[in-house]
Figure 1: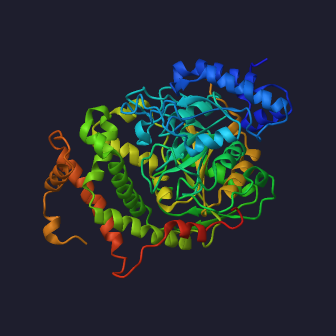
Figure 2 (figure 1 turned 180 degrees about the vertical axis):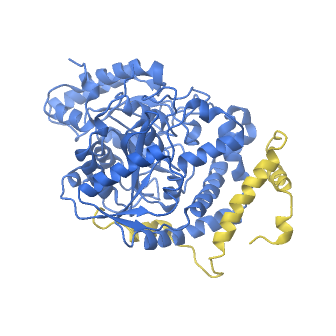
Length: 471
Length: 75
């Protein structure tokens, strides 16, 4: 009865539960079985909570039978990046330092997922302390890409990207400080939404950089991301950066008629040095978007490398502040990679950090004036290069590693500094057989527009229907 | 722009000083210099950009600006 249920999209699973075609228990069993089957190959789960999940699924089924279903995600099993607190439960943040940390409170995410009736059935692997876009983890082992286990998943939401692509969870919530939702989504061939800064609460989420951290969903389709975004978006008094801006009905917005939007294609930076194989796929995606009614316009974006550097200075300063005590007292419990990436933050003067933050609003206003004057959304690759192998990301010294990081996040990190939303959408495969992806970057709080465009693209193409042959 | 005296300080000295300030353990040979160069690059990027700031510029409320510039059709 349960065979194949894990292959449904989140939207289809939701519809099936509503129509009583199957139960939450059956759905949860299917996901757990799939997770257990793929995990020896992919190492995407740090923990599978089978007994607790099945008990929760039984309660969800009982509630539904009494007409008490809490919404579209009621009874849906999901697994999330292991960085969101659930009171009384283990939350490692992908680290050795917090290898036995029991969360003292519920994160906003945990509260919202509970209120929506979802089943939290697993903790997903991630980069240590969400500090790397590569996705490797020396403490728990690297997550492996479902399309080729010799390749990286991207990070830091590495387990989320791999588990969603492998059909082991219908969706997953990750975090994005410099690309940590979009990069693994792109590398694993799934959709990832980096939300506007302030759209989703970070309360109870392991921090990396307070000014840059955002929380967002990964799923197989834009429609599934819309369902997840509806649960997690909104004001949270416990996170004062969250906004009162009303949360639209993201799912309902998918079906609205597409206005003749202008899609801005940057003439500088984003396509510089792009791998020809990536370029072919991204160009084809742009053509598909034009075919469904978008009008392409050339735009010149402000100095992105400068934004990247300022973002780096702010992010490293805040990460150093977060980790100072542990880095002093337990330096050996960090991987060399994360330690090296973080320690530069101790050397950035407070004046430079504050100047960087002071420039942020000015840079955003300038970016909006210059890049969005002629365009409603921007179009860019997520990764300029093909997805590398694990071996390629583990070789060399600190400087070599820094170059890998730069190459993986050069198109994503600046968007975090600007606070803008961005949707990563898979658009085919490069010559090494790994996924390629484009991103749609929107005005602040344009999540509904981005999801609607992503959905329209996926209605016109079938890349999201391809499944990796794993386990 | 940093003045010439500051720019002439060896990067590893700046890195060492910051390490002592934060009471961090010793680093492998060469790492202080490497960090110093990285920080010098980041500081220069910020300093160059900060030249645009006027003496009496008030900090912008970034969160409010995001709301002000929002996509009104979407949100």
